[in-house]
Amino acid sequence: MAIALWGCELALAFWALRVAQFFVYRMGRIVREPLAPVDVPVAVILPVKGVDASTQANIEKLLNQDYPTARFIFAVESVNDPVHAIIETLMNQNPSRRITLVVAGQATHRSQKVHNQLAAIDQTTSDDRFLAFMDADAAPGPHWLHALVIPLTYPHIAATTGYRFYVPEVATNANAMLSVMNAIIAGMLGPHRRTVAWGGSMAISREKFFSLGIYEAWQHALSDDYVLSYQVKKQGGQRIHFVPQCMVASPAQTSWAKLFEFATRQYRITRRCAARLWFTGVLGAAAYLLTLASSFYFAVWPDKDFSMAWGAYIPGVVFVFVLVLSMLRGWFLLRAGKLLLPDHAGALAACAKWFTFLFPAVQAFNLFCLLAAGFGDTITWRGIRYQMVNRRETRIVPPLREPRQD
Image (tube, rainbow, N blue to C red; front, side):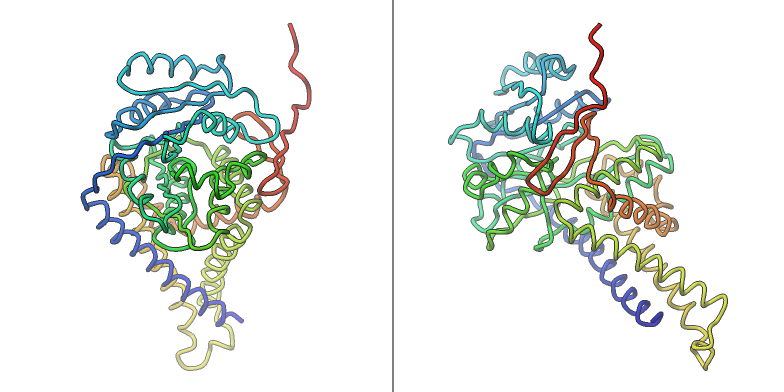
């Protein structure tokens, strides 16, 4: 049994290393290529709720895109949200940009984010050939929109996506853990069928958004990107294309408690919207840790099955191979982050030990969060508690007590 497990894990470790290596070299080559000219009308939609330390700076970067024909639609829940005043100020400071501010109101049967997005989409017209979406905690480069739109001109590509790379604002262990956990997911993206869209940096033609039934599927949805990905892939013949130039930096400023809450929430959404992805993550992390633990155990306390000839060395060799392969994988992921986000290379380099020597600890915490996500069907997101019934149905859980009216 142990030999079979170790053989499978070694094969998976080699495969994961190859995927990470492919991600670095192929994506690195693509980002060095010049962008083809494109000048197609695009509506850029930013749903936003509340204000974080980087919100205003990220919105300013969005408005500084080198895409003259883009128009920007910001959707907020209420005029009382502090971000409403920030957007109004930026609208006055950027008179050359076409900016619309939409007040979506409070969501009642879907996530507030999706509710805001739908309110913004209702403001678009057939003149807006493409729809692009961004999150307020993402910091796009000046060519983000340009790169995101180009692949959509090919008929077999239904949607494009970038992804985030968490950059620690302060080199704490929790921030480093978040960066590595997220990088593991980022390294799986590429020109293949398993790529799914990420709502913080994705685009689709407006025509396909409606013809593929995404508008209807979003009506009661919690997750924008998982639902969009499902609607695209179930048609067949359509692809979601990862654009490495659209990797955006997100600030990692968290604590262990907040990190556990965030990771568990994300994995719980994944379990409800893409159960096979969640289950694959559980199996992968569990097999890796079980292989390390069991091979170490038998290397220190040999079993009779490994006592013959060279058999005594097998557990130790397996342990070293799996550990070294995972360290190399982490090193490739770190290199990818520094390559795609050169302005943040120094901050990422401070996490090097977590990407390499402490990779097993990352996988242990990752598995803990994955397993915790297997229980329960409620999450709290931006102060709102949701119950996930399935991919297309969401219920908002009212607070335990109504706020006092003084």
